Length: 240
Image (cartoon, rainbow, N blue to C red; front, side, top):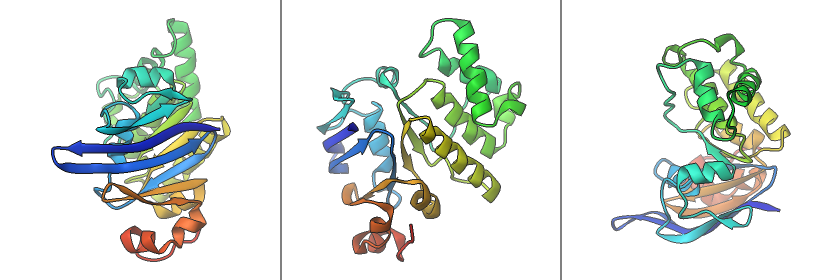
């Protein structure tokens, strides 16, 4: 079953097409990698899916409901959450309060929000930092907090925008494990990432953009040896 359907989406800024007639489906329960060179249109696609941009052409459907044209908070309430490439927590608030602020999107009582926050913080490995003011966290933990804030909204589809960027090898391994645990919970994931070993190891399928157009789509082993993808982005064939 397709959870998300992107149908013929184009996004123009003035005369520039940041995305041009892109279509793909995301099936329930899978991890889909979205890759391509800088400026390929990846984050623009995320912005269209979660309502920051209304597509110039085309439509987006989530669980068979048209969501293109809705506002971000409406789309989030339907079950789509996202992280951002540049992490921006509520800097003067603690880790716990950051997560609890997100939890209130889904629940109405403080007791429910507290329960969700504690569970999400433990799940993402931030339990030792519950009372830490977020602006003092190192990058790796800020990235975890960004994921925790998104998870606290209890999404069915999670959009991750370069959640591994800037991490050291140990943090990278921890984050990969978190992504796999999220999938094990039944949450569908779409991820933008430049770490090709990460994308190849965790993705069920991969969509490749270049100059705003989809140039390939398929399983990791197919994408890793696709001549168009190798020429445009990878530089050399990749092993899944």
